[in-house]
Amino acid sequence: MPRINLLPWREEERKKRQRDFGMALGGAVLAAIAVIMLTMLSYSQMISGQERRNGRLTEEINELQRSIEEIDGLERQKERLLARMEIIDQLQKSRPEVVHLFDELVRQLPEGVYLTGMKQTGTRIEIRGVAQSSTRVSALMRQIDASDWLSDPEVERVETTTAGASRQAEFVVYLKQFRPEDDMDGGA
Image (tube, rainbow, N blue to C red; front, side):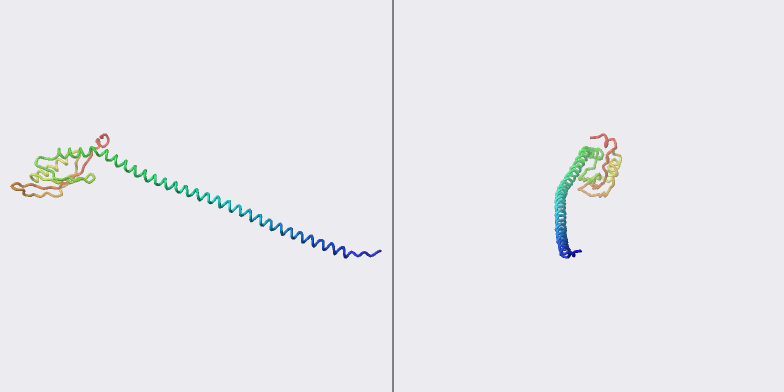
């Protein structure tokens, strides 16, 4: 049998396999680098897309915030207007009360009693005046107590003074203005 030397062939085969392995390894490294680059590019695009969406959301939030501030301003303006309307309505309803008050004071004022001042705070009224005597002041209080529009008379003070030859009583009386129920509902 002839002797065949297979060593050079094996050596070439080994070199070819090493070359193929090196090329496959190089290809795998290039493929890995390409995959990594594509993954980084993909993530970069996703991040920039999310940043655009976040920017859009921020713009929309700012726009909504401006709208909310505008709505709050309109609500405050509405509340102020409603408060004004309520005050005007109360004034409209209380217009006849002033007329009734002065009319009732004139009716209930006994002879010999003169008013020098009057001050109203809410429904409480302070009356200052001069009477010929302190009995006239008590007559005024009885008539106020019997009135439909005035109630709860309270005397703060009655001082008897001398003016020339005559004596007079200076007084301060507090009373409350009262509206009868039938006039509160149907009057105006």
